[in-house]
Length: 354
Image 1 (cartoon, rainbow, N blue to C red):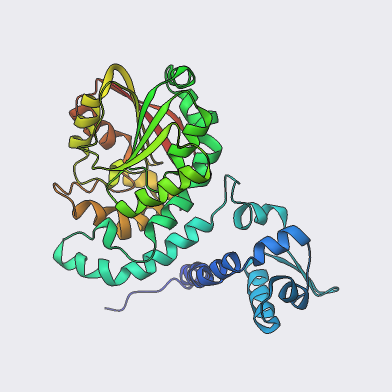
Image 2 (cartoon, rainbow, N blue to C red; image 1 turned 45 degrees about the vertical axis):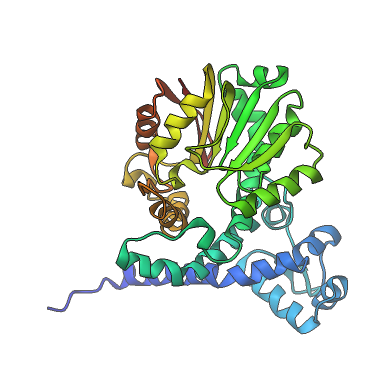
């Protein structure tokens, strides 16, 4: 039986698809603009013609003209037909050209490219149910993840997230022992170490290549005196009598989050604190059917769930686990209380007490 088609609904959906495809096909062009310094040149020097941008950035004018035209058609740049010049507005500059901006999203475009490459690895896992290891995934996933998360940490960690925890900021100022577990390239660890020089920080990650980059990052920012990085699993990292343990956007990726929670509980002082930063999410699917949830479910399908399924237990909480599931795992690990200390459009920051 032929189903009746509502032409108005169909046209709206095709329009949505054109927008989605336009965004998807923009990924390599945005990354080229970042890699070749095109956004930075427009941000620093103002409106330019294709010839001016080509000269400024040492690229071929024909490519510059086509790239600029696409960016204007996308609404990423504005175009003045009278002068033939293209402008990067200040609002768009915060997204494309200013790494310290809280809405700098070049790392998200890098993640999108990695996810496209990951298709060949994840598609077979749909059939087998097996995972794809964090160290086996395509591209420089670790670089993209670090770059994506860094702006949030840079803008919120010291000024908002840590002060929202009960007495933690005061301890850090006085001198505390901290483990940053799942530290990746060490952006979160270094930010805390610079802000609280009286405290000592050890970053742990199970990916050796990320630990190498974290050590370089610590040297570049002059925090080697109170910071070090080691390869270790979340369920096995060394340390005892810790004042604070931090997990940044990684608990949901772990195969055994309860085991990780149990180990954190053993490593903390009786009055210590565990800060868990996780993607913003409601407890029900219907709470997450929004633009942020759409992004996180995509990343979860292509990166987070495969990563967890590759590990022992393979619980695979996913990037949209929600407070209820996360709190249950944390409580099962031996913590008596869990609360949402603060939240942003992209993250929720949890505080767990032994």
